[in-house]
Amino acid sequence: MSRLLEPVTLGDSIQLRNRICMGAMTRNRCIDDNKPTSANAKYYADRARDGAGLIVAEGTFVYYNGAEWPHAPVMFNHDHAEAWKKVTDAVHDVQGKIFFQPWHPDIRAGRIQNDNMPMLKEHNYPVYAPSKIPATGGKFHSLEGCPGYTTNITEIGDPKFIVEQYKNSVTLAKLAGFDGIELLAQGFLCSRANNRTDAYGGSVENRCRFPLEVLDAIIDVWGPRHVGIKICPSDDLNDSIMSYEELTEVYEYFIPQLVQRKLAYINISRRGCHPEKGQDGSIRPHFRPKGFGLPDHWEPLRQFGNLVKYPGSETMLMVNHEYTVEEAELLVNEGKIDLVTFGRPFIYNPDLIARIAQKKSLAVSDRGKHVNYGPYKTVDEFYNDWPRIST
Ligand SMILES: Cc1cc2nc3c(=O)[nH]c(=O)nc-3n(C[C@H](O)[C@H](O)[C@H](O)COP(=O)(O)O)c2cc1C
Image (tube, rainbow, N blue to C red; front, side):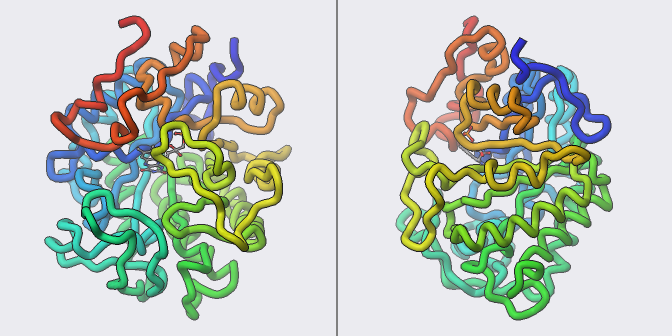
């Protein structure tokens, strides 16, 4: 049997049926006032029924600020938690495990929000960001003709209120029956987005302060062994790029801070490393600009892997972004990773685990790249209509 398919314990007690995880993917199907519906429950339960080791649910806004994505979920009151409970129940009914990904776009990619998005306008909520620095890139999926940035940015004052938004959201996620949390929080780390002069800007230690405060708030609610984090050192989307020198300095400080906290896992993305790749064009391949080049054949796993995975470390190492089954298998066999995330392959293959177990080829999208988002004609279109091999 492939070592990818062997059961593992995540944290101290989360029994995974295998090492293959479904990555968080925003699919814009929360059409009931930004709450999930039976369509979402079916989508996740189908993938859990087939045996996905761990599912990380789509990024979910911790407050009404996630304006860039229509029909993306929010989680900040009991109604939201009740709606999500139907999803987690459906996943648990078929022995799956599901983590919640709290999302604050102002922190991850605030500068690529737009104040004209209906959700922000309706709730009179500003585009918050670590500093008032407009992005030079980015995209607005739902505001046609708008450039990928706004200049109408409100600098976050004391970020403690955002830490509290996270804490409220992950507390509700517990009520909603999730098995744990995967944090994604990048904005403050990057000097292109953060030129603050207070305790949250300047030195690497200061720039790491905010994500660590959020993490500690999440740990207060969940304990560290139910918490993972996704990091993207080489990311080049949404104007989040760092030079090689900067990313080295930041992540050589940040990762040991994470491991010290005994997190269940660290999920390292290699987005931005391989400009020639791009399975379906949905993640735009483009070359890193001058001054931001990486050493030849560099991958974050090679540089940072041993900061996570070493004898005595209690934190598992997960990787993501354009891995193949063969590559992941090799890395597990070599003891370099514990878990792998697949994203898009889980969209097109509701029976991904069966296909891997039966050594069948994986489906790729033959319906165009727009299928990753939606909804179009119906909520299930391109969402719950991907065939299994047996049908
Ligand atoms: C449609 C789509 C939506 C995504 N939404 C999220 C998200 O909400 N949170 C996140 O951390 N990553 C998100 N990602 C990134 C995926 O989790 C994953 O890292 C990426 O697709 C690379 O893995 P893959 O090459 O196996 O698809 C998204 C990717 C896609 C294609």
